[in-house]
Structure formats: C-alpha cells, structure tokens
Length: 318
Length: 307
Image 1 (cartoon, helix red, strand yellow):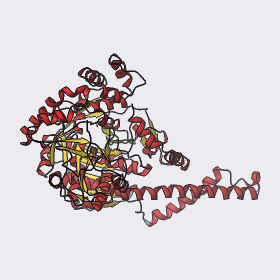
Image 2 (cartoon, each protein chain N blue to C red; image 1 turned 120 degrees about the horizontal axis):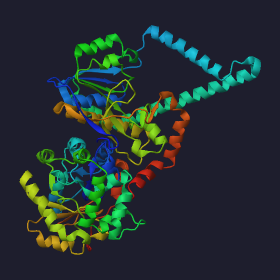
Image 3 (cartoon, one colour; image 1 turned 30 degrees about the horizontal axis):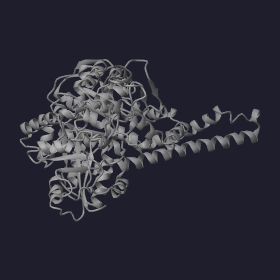
C-alpha cells in the first residue's frame, strides 16, 4: 500500500534492459526468506547475495574487540562512581561494583533471552515455507563482515557487478560512495513505520506506545540516513490475537518482503514511480541501545494483560 | 470430528492487513492457515468441493471430509493459500464479486474500514443521522441494518473526501483479477458467485436486489470463465437477519439447480433434510489444534427453519 499521509511525487528512474539485482541481508531465517523470495520471483536477475555475518571477525579484530570490552566495562564503572574509593570507602565501592555487575549481567541475560525467543518464533513461522522456497535458490550467499560494507574493497565489488537494484534487509547505514555506484535504485526494507518510527526496534517501540497502526513495514529508497529515504510502500502486517512481540516482528518482515517484490516489479515495468518524501525533523530515530530491558518488560506486561486482543477487537468495533 | 462434510469459510490469507482490512478482520496470516491445514489433514480428509459435494449428495460420507472455501476473491489467497492447499493435494473454492474483480467498485466495507482507521467516522456519523443513526449505535451494524443506495452514497462521499485517486486505484490490488481467477480455475478450484458487489441482499433491507446482483455476477462468470456457477454464496449471511422469503425465492428462480451457500456453523451430512443448501463454518481466530477442538463441538444440520 502507498502511504496516505505523505505527498507523492513522480520520479523517473533510469531506463535499462538489464535489471540485475544485488541483495544484502543478515543471516537470520527472515533474511533467508527475503533472499529466497526475491530469487523465486526474479530468478536470474538476482546476480549476487551478500550475507552480513557478525561472526566473521579477524584475529586482530577479536583482540581489539576484547580490549574495547575491557575499556567499556571500566568506563561504565567509572561513570557510576564505583572507583571513587576516597568518597565511598573501599567496602562501599566494592558493593557498588558488585551491584552494577549484577545489574549489567541481568540486562545481558534479558536481551540474550529476547534474541533466543525471537529466533524460536521465526523458526516456527518460516521454517516450513523456507523449505519450500529453497528450490528457487540459484545463489549461495557470500559472507561479509559488517564493518566492511562501506569499504573500498566491497564498493569495488559492487562496481564490477554494476547492479540496477541494490536491495537490503538489515545491516548498517550505507555510505554515499557505495550508493553512488548503483545504476538504478537502492531499496531498503525497514520493519517500522517511517517517518514516525525509524532506526532500531521500531516494532517494539510501536508496541510500547500501544500504537497498532504504527506496526508497519516500509520500503524506501536507501539514503545515508536511517530509514529516511523516499517511501515507495508502507503497510501493516496481519496480526493475530495470540501473537507475541517476536511473531509480530517476523510478520512485519514477511510483509515487507512482499512489498519489496511489488516495488521491484513496478520499477521493472514502469520507470516512472510515485515516491513519498519523508519530512525532515519529523518522527523519531531510535538507537539500538535505547531499547532497554525495562522497555521490553513494559511491553511484556501489556501482552500478559491481553492488551493486543482487546485492541484488535476495539479497532473492529465501530 | 464427526463423519460429515465440513466446509470452512475463509476470506483473506495474507501477511498484510492494511487499513482497508484492519477494521473488518477475518484475515489469517499464512503460517496460521498452514497450521489449520496441517491439523485438518490429520483429523480428516481434505477434499475438493466437487468431491465433497458428490459424497454428500449420495450420502456416502464415512469419514470427516473437509473443504476450504474463500470468499470475496482476495488476490493473496492465490499467492499464499494455493501453494499450501496444493501441498495437501487438494483444491478449494473461491467466491467472487464481479465488480471487485473488474475493478468497477471497491467493496463498501473496505471503504468503511478505511474511514474508521483514519479518524473520519465522525463525518460519516454526521451523514448517517438523517437515516436515524444515533451516536450510541455501532456504525457497522447500523449500516447493515439500514442498508440502502443512500447509505452507500454517504459512505462513498466520505471515502472520496478523505482519499485521492492513486490511493483509490491502488486499493483494488487487494482483489484478484480475471487472469488470477483463471489460474485458480486452471488449478481445479471451484468458482462461485458471491453477487456483484457484496450488498446485504439476503436481508430485508436490500432483498429486492437479490436476483439482479447474482445475475450480474453470473454474466461476468459466464463471459470470462466460460461456465455457469454451481453455487450462489450469500454475502454476510447474518442468520438472524435472513429475509423470510430467502429460501423460497431462491428455489423459485433456481432454474439451473444451483445450491445456495450459507454461513452457519453446521456440518453437512443429511442432504434429504434440505435441498440445494450448503452450510459453511467460520474458523475462529485460533491455531490448528484449537480449530479441531472447535470443529468437534459443531453439530449436523438436522432440520428446522432457515428463515
């Protein structure tokens, strides 16, 4: 669906006979579904599939990662005045260090449990469909380290492929040097309601704000801003009354995949498309770190009190 | 599950439920639908409408038979439900409304859903007052209970005021087109007549239009799919609001010996009890396992008045 709240304008994309596609995704099941669906629909037009794999860290990087971790831990304790022995006294300082450590470990446990539940729910939703889709796969993914996405090495690779479409799901921000190498258009799928909710965990933020109509998926032209490019499609996923945070997120991504296919088909057949520019200085862009365990717990409390099924019922009773 | 023919009535199977559909409900995500089919296939035999009907008519049902029936002609049914049903070596039925199929008119309930989701109901309420609407009444029910061309016009006016042309054109993508329905026909699906524009023609408020609405849709089915439909499927079918003369009127005009398809939680078992009528069951918003529990509680039609 096209957004109803933003003004549309016609944009002419470059004419071509070669609509080749490069895909960039993460490694989760929803990403694989995305890549397989695109290959199912567009076959040999899909010429490369890069998979951002965060486990790909070189030895040098591993060493510098642990150095960074130590620095971050020390800096955290310092910011909470844990090392102020003169003021706190040794015993009290040790107590502060101990309680901060427990707090941090608990937060990590909650977030790691969150990731595990997300994975389990994705498996439940997508496993069967992915087994059906695998037969359409014509490419194996090329693994790439997230830190190398805007490197000159990767940009050279893309330049060599010379894609018309550069289609992304997940990953970090893409730089201008990379985006300028795309012959036609770079498109990104954002699990969120742009321009109102951009950045990270935007489905969760919509749930936290109890705004069902902001549980959406947005297909937009990729720019250097997070989820801020001109919109081509935005719509809402089919939410089931017994859904949880993770199934809602997964459904939003599944919807976005279908919207992306719709957009690519439209561009292939008609180079003049309507785009909906996002106003600057509107909405919110959320950082990863802002989604704290306490936000997550608020959402969980809502679900436990059956907010979702009541809200869906309310929307249908008028 | 009892031995009998269970016809399950779905509408939309999709990952998407936008503001045109959110206010109506009735959509199932593909994974939930797949869970339904998985459990149904474990507890009965999923059959085509043709096969189910044959066994029903000849009173030859020795196990639970299940058929799947989709109403309104949503495009996503072909995209998501077709592969799932084919994986179970079955076919299904789809009831189409000719004006949605040909993009002549958007389903009025979708317009109502749109209006409700963008805070424009207050404008519609204003227009409905002259028909007797009071704020304490539910708009949805009021419109159905007092359906008329004037009420329809009021909905159209508000919808047009708060949408623009490309949005209105884009909305039709929700429905399948002739080429899409032909694909379903080629895959062995039953195509049924759901009337021209899904007005409440089985209810007193709009019953006078019953024949013309079905005949308009029948002409389109004949023209594009080269067939006469075997089934006329009632839109809405609010059991308590059925027009008294519905069945008798249908039998009077039913020269082609069609069946009228109702929406009432009943299992089809005894064709001798009622001629030319089929019952369908609405699956509740539950997963596959709970769907079976629900179906276990449904009884046969054992006679009695329908109108």
